[in-house]
Amino acid sequence: MSSEEKDFATLPEIEEALNSLSDSDLNRIKKEARSLAALYWFCSKGRDEDDLMQIAFERVLTLKRKWSKSKVDFVRFILGTVRSVANHWVEEKGAGLEVQSQILQTDEGDVLDQMENSPSHRTSPEDELNDQIGKMTHEKLVEWIDDFFKDDTPVQLVMLELLESKKGPEIQESFGIDQTEYQTIIKRMDRKLAKEGIKWRRHVR
Amino acid sequence: MSDKTKDIQKKIDNIAQEIEESTLLMSDDEINEEIKAMGEDPEASANKVRSLIQSSIMKQKKKRFAEAEQRIEQQRKLFQNIDIGLNEGNQRDLLINILSQNPSIQERLTVQFRDLNELSDEDVASILRDIKKLNLLRDQDKDE
Image (cartoon, rainbow over all chains, first blue to last red; front, side):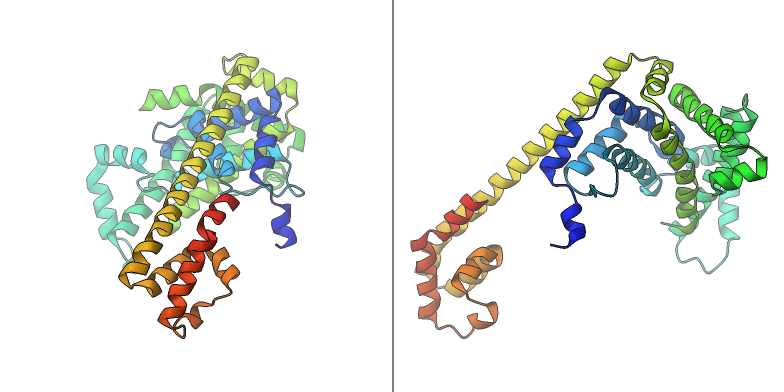
């Protein structure tokens, strides 16, 4: 057994760590799961924070996701697992269904036209459709940010920059804000997602 | 997965990472405030997550127990098959099957698969009788 493998927690260690989580840490996990279930609205298929947490706990309890004890704090490990589960929703078959169904209802013809004119190097109609869904998903996310955070321009701007894969320090520099101001904006985004995200999602469905 | 889907996955994860960092930076009091802002009581909320953990632990335990039972049942059937194998003459296939499913027996008998073809029918039958006599399959069940 390599030293890296030795560092991975065993099942009893995982169970003990889960059972030892404080109320605050349990709520930390719940809050993140709630925010992420709202953030990933376009591929959640109606699933909520309980679904996210349940899958995350199952992954760690089946050791599909391994905890490197000396490298990562357990709470960070669990939060990372919840994030990984949410991110996995994007790649599920039919993940863009909620966006796709809106496209089909409104401009089905446009989608087909765009597919016919797309580059010929693509190998399958399924890839073409996935690319269209990916493109539409990006556009829908931008629309959603504009709409959902319409009362908070700094949050809108920071989210759009993050959606362009920019990192915190780069965004702080381009907007001329310090780290504290940046974190305050992120907290406002997070709070609105956790507080109103699910309600908004139900509203649009 | 298409390139566009991967791209979306990466971009949205960039936002999710910021949420995660922000969550980790919050004090316990701030977390309580966030839970209250979600319209929930912090203690009840924590207990609900704790119940979710307990039910996940129980579910996995039951699953592992069912899998262990299934393995034991398979071993039991293999053990029963030794009698049939000895009577019907398909001992070599049976021995290969047993060894492939039970590496620890293979170690104990110090028989390698590449040597099996060189064993005589009498040797194969003798090994099967030894396995049965020594109750190796059952011993292995106990080890598990």
